[in-house]
Image (cartoon, rainbow, N blue to C red; front, top):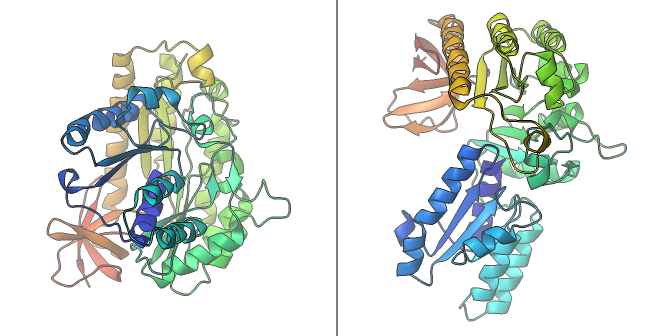
Length: 425
């Protein structure tokens, strides 16, 4: 979602003839987009912000902006006092403060005309304009904010209540993206499965997938992130039946112990999750499934962690995004639950799951050796082209051809736990 927010602002700025600089020292405008989902992310953001202060001191005309979850939808007066040399503060998914500030600062002769241009750019709700060229795989937010309020999660406080965007606007934006270079669209929401549930009689996610998959130029569709409670049979059927919807589902479990899940307010049990995975695999043969796991949540005993380890071992999922619990401000767990798992024990549990998952994915990926996979190429990394299979596996290929945006068959010649390598057919 932060990538989508950054892209939205970048497109808006480029519509105003403001273009990327090669490095911060050459820039007249520097914007830092921030994440606070974990303390480490917040610490990195503040460290990066402090590193920009010398540039401001040497160039007082430099405009520095701070945006994202560090600010939040309600603003952050403490940050404004702490960083007086920052010119612009803006919350998530909100480019307007930047564009209004630049509109006031413009030295162009026809400033009224320029301000009108700013208004026109803002009218393009997510920065989707007919002039912008889009990347091969584009993120398209369809649900903003979240109302589920897991006890550890800061997102509802920083991004606001769940709000589904208008289906007509989403479909229009999807078509513009496809017309201007996007081959794959990734529909985004904190709980993307809940799209449309807050709009009486509105279109739901399975219907939206069916409509967008029919648009000219759209070759692949993905969506994330799902929640076990709202991964319905209708949604699973849509993935199974629509050729353009890729067979890869991100559905976080977060923990394998029922008491920990209850303390997290997740709303399902270990067995519920196992049954969901079985149902997905039965309906979508060859599907890949990704999950998120938090280790060291308050009250997580060794026995509770063992439940998580066993779940991951049994289910053999294709991706596991692992994190160590860190208390976030104004969340239920930070206020009422003691952070009682020592840091070194969190790291030990993290490493155990990391090693397990590396072995599991390494074994899963070996089955692709010698097989042919259809790969959508997104760009280059060093001297190799980088792309993804339908199940979202990363593939590298050496080729003198320009493969950007192409769907090509690749014979897999090497496999590892994190990527595959192959040769064009």
